Image (cartoon, rainbow, N blue to C red; front, side, top):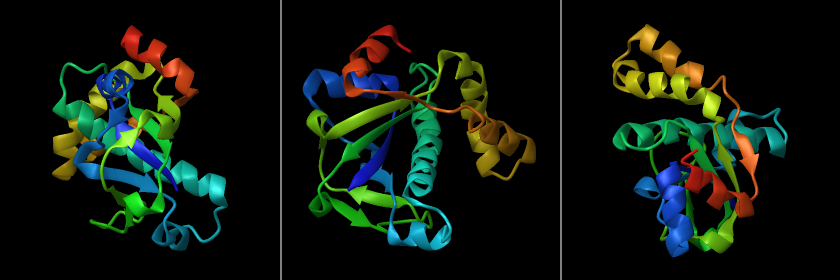
Length: 167
């Protein structure tokens, strides 16, 4: 199953160093039956884009927890066996799945990372997360503004260069 894993650039460096990655809170995002039901008219590519967007939003939270991480959202796309994925594991997010155990580098099929030019907007979104969660409309606008930036696609062979450059 294709699962989108929120990450940070330091997490990518760790994955490359040890060959495995334990997703934050063992959480990932995928095209689940609930997501299909929510977007009845979307084809598989559109649904995968939605799942990746959910992972990118979670990447903002990982950045908030790691002030030293470069302010760029990261999503890793991985092919994970169904025996490692629990669908509709928690929360009200129709794309959320739980991952049982680490994801290995060999399972990662691509990386998706913000362009360096998005860093200021991503930093603003990270700083606004708590206020957005509390209902502040201006803060929500800042968080939503991060989604205006498309994540760039990287082959797995390119991830070491991205992680080494710090973005």
